Image (cartoon, protein in one colour):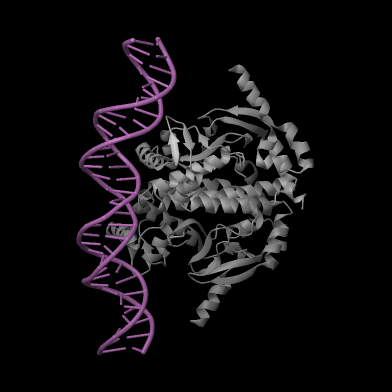
Amino acid sequence: MHETKADKLAEISPAQNYLLAALPAGVKQRIYPQLELVKIPLGKSLYESGYAMQHAYFPTDSIVSLLYVMESGASAEISIVGNEGLLGIPLFMGGRSTPSRAIVQSAGCAYQLHEKGLQEEFNRGGDFHNLLLRYTQSLITQMAQTAVCNRHHTIDQQLCRWLLLSLDRLGTNTLNMTQELIANMLGVRREGVTEAAGKLQRAGVIEYKRGHIVVLDRPRLEELSCECYAVVKRETDRLLRYLPSRALHH
Amino acid sequence: MHETKADKLAEISPAQNYLLAALPAGVKQRIYPQLELVKIPLGKSLYESGYAMQHAYFPTDSIVSLLYVMESGASAEISIVGNEGLLGIPLFMGGRSTPSRAIVQSAGCAYQLHEKGLQEEFNRGGDFHNLLLRYTQSLITQMAQTAVCNRHHTIDQQLCRWLLLSLDRLGTNTLNMTQELIANMLGVRREGVTEAAGKLQRAGVIEYKRGHIVVLDRPRLEELSCECYAVVKRETDRLLRYLPSRALHH
DNA sequence: AATTATATGTTCTATATAGAACATAATAAT
DNA sequence: ATTATTATGTTCTATATAGAACATATAATT
């Protein structure tokens, strides 16, 4: 048990995070030495509403949800961040905090970077700066689409969208999360997720068992999802296609 | 009629837009000569989904909504921009376009700035850069809150929130917009707005008549609104409190 | 092996909103 | 003045989801 965990940690590298991987050599030289690998367990809160942040996090194999909790206690996810992105946007946009919380939705690792290191490199105004702003723009797209999705689409459709977003960030066809957790993220009742997931299971699209979901038919899942998944994916691909490091190859 | 319009144009100045007003003298000297005052009529589209932008707009007395239109034709507003902000965020964040549209919701004027001038000043990395990023952060807050609001709050509450957002940006207690238009923004049926507005009128909070709304009791309107209005206002005030020009007085 | 905790399944009623069809009133156009 | 257009009001039914109460099944703990 102990050894497996150690092995897993050894497998992790900054290059697993797309943003870190995309940095040009010069930036890597300055940033990589400042990165600290941390394990982030399920349910951990990286940021609380209104509290000043001190670190940015670049997930490698973990997923973190940004979610709002309302006065009534009801909650809803506004975006999801995995190895394609980073957490801590207000550190460079300004404000150092947000009204939202950041909760680990799938345990794993992330590289931690202190605000000072982040801001110093950001303020150089080069590729790092531009990459972070482009990623932020893609996150804006995701939030905007979530707003519209919440307004117009059914739980059935939203569950599909959400599973796809999570799959993409984990790079597997297996998710470890309970229906209760998913319900909290979507901002709906657990019973609603049970029904929607039951339909998907009976249709042979997914298979699940006490917090363990296997996606059997991804194309079908994409068909059953609302357009929101594809819109966000297309836009994110467009925004992050010409990453600094790739530009070197052109 | 002709004279009144001319008078109105003469009254407009860049200082009516909070962002333009907040710029330090040096930036003003470079930016103001590049600004072109334009009239923007109700319903005009400033940006279309997926089309590259060529100008940023700083509204003075107009309101513009960012809205998504779905495949089904259904729409929903994701944020609202008036004299506290600017349109054209992808010009400095990257991407030059978004999946959303920008539709004039309340006619008036705005100062137009060509992308080149915007980018040149932004790339200097000074107060202009920081101010625009902070404003973007406040817009992110608004979008996130809209997502949650769409999930959990009633039409009655959302109508109040929306009226308050619009009032703040116009600086009056009068709005000129039909229930049909409001319904499109909220992403609900026109009938739903008729009912909600009817309740507010019977309660003496507003008075309306064919596209003309007068707010009689603003404190009551704030009480009837969901928390979303206050959360966004508080956060926006926090983010934009220490504007560059104000910093000079400290 | 027995017990407890956790995750999921089922089923009821209540409610907000959608969808639809049509009525009425105010303004604009002829 | 008459007609057309636009904005608002009303009232049906249908439906998705919430709220609630409880059953069952699987895993963890003792």
